[in-house]
Amino acid sequence: MSTGSDARLVLLRHAKSAWPDVADHERPLGPRGLRDAPAAGRWLRDAGCLPALVICSTARRARETWALAAGQLGAEVPVRFDERVYAAEPEDLLEVVSEVPEEVGTLLLVGHNPGLADLAVMLAREPLDPAEAGAVERLSEKFPTSAIAVLACPGPWPELTPGSVRLADFAVPRGAAH
Image (tube, rainbow, N blue to C red; front, top):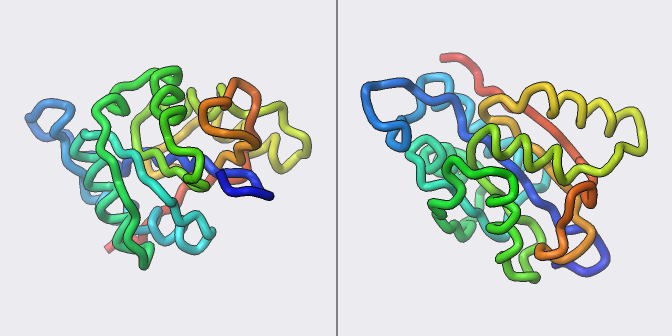
């Protein structure tokens, strides 16, 4: 992890999907998702959350979300597609994160709810100020499609434990309607 500052675990829930008559794993993005996924990429870029590594669910809607978001970053980012992220419990996601090399300072996980929201809530420490408390409360109430949680992590990835990270930001970027 980067020395002198917290590493960041960035959680991006896939954009809004369509519901065609296909298996859940193969559901594509819907019209709103096609607008919101690039907005998520712009938010990541503008917030300075350029990941050193992306771990993405193998589900089609997650892969499409990442492809559209990545197109807005202005940089090539290595990505791993990991089937364990699809339909994962927070403990499963934490195991995936614990395997990340220590030198990765910003990790982006593209996945699904309820796993991502539950992971963020599980890892978040007790808020120290009203702004942080408000962000944790909003995240706990709803982690909508295209939502992004940025968690500041104080130690190596394998040492992340419940209550050990600070929720640095929580955003729900939306694209303009066409």
